[in-house]
Amino acid sequence: MKKRIDLRSDTVTEPTQEMRDAMHTAVVGDDVFGEDSTVAEFEALAADMLGKEAGLLVTSGTLGNLLAVLCHTKPGDEVMVEKKAHIYYFERGMTTVAGVTPFPLSSDRGVIRPEHIKAEMRGASGHESDVALLCLENTHNLWGGTAVTAQEMDAACDFAKQHGMKVHLDGARLFNAAVALGAPAKELARGSDSVMICLAKSLCAPVGSALVGSREFIKKARRWRSILGGGMRQAGIIAAAGSVALRTMVDRLAVDHENAKLLGRELNTIPGLKVDESIIHTNLVYAVVDPAQTTPRDFVTALRERDVYCFAASQTELRFATHKDVTKEQILEAVAIMKQVYCK
View 1 (tube, rainbow, N blue to C red):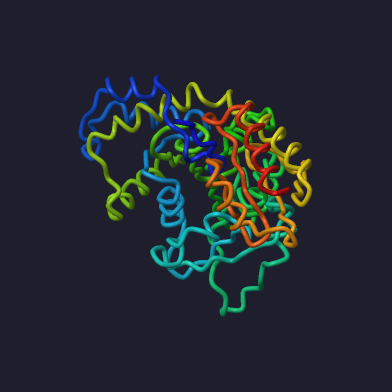
View 2 (cartoon, one colour):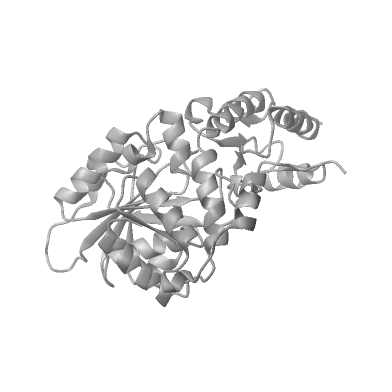
């Protein structure tokens, strides 16, 4: 049977054989009791790679982000977020669980600069909430996978801290940024008080994320994880795959980035599709659809009938994600099919 070409998201990646073997042989214990050595090893590895004191295994990036908000804020606080940030655009825990108010900021294609923060700061009149937290995102999903440099991250973090804010980094694809920029992930994370990284996107683990920060922060996050029902028992089975992901899957992200550039170039050869190739920093590609020819939703439906999968990101754009399980040859095959569909 012909294998589908799935470019919807890097979340569709399957674990490697090494991950499967590690899960099969993992030493496990009750992690809620602090007795799972495989989890402890994973959490120490994640913390070390991001330059923080301690780490916490969580089931998802959404949970990791929510724990960070709960730890850094109190109900009634405000949280500054980029206006298209994943934590603001797609996640609901900030308001419904943490009881804080998101304060959306403008940016330069996902890069929050001190002037963006300063422009929205208000005087202390007694009528405003306290701005307790700045949330950053790297790479920035809805701006096309923008990789934010260490210097840009530092500038935003320093300004926020000068004004009494904590900083949380949604680093779901932080290692994509690190590879694209040729900088260690810990350099990109150094100004943040907490960082979440996802294991189940381009790093190809089957499930899980990590939240890292100071030892006191992780102690607090662990309590909140328990309150929200996120405690796990023999979680070493998950953590074992996560450790393999961190040790073996980071450097190969460069292949995904090259394939994304190839895909962007090839999509631009299809009349009616337009890709800004200059903003393809990592593994995400956004293409604008000519409304006179079709809509993203109709195009996605037509491609699915031919076993090519992508994502309708909006009423005008398609999103593609390159990853381990789509080869260069499959990308070229997918483009050939798109030409047949789009140019018929």
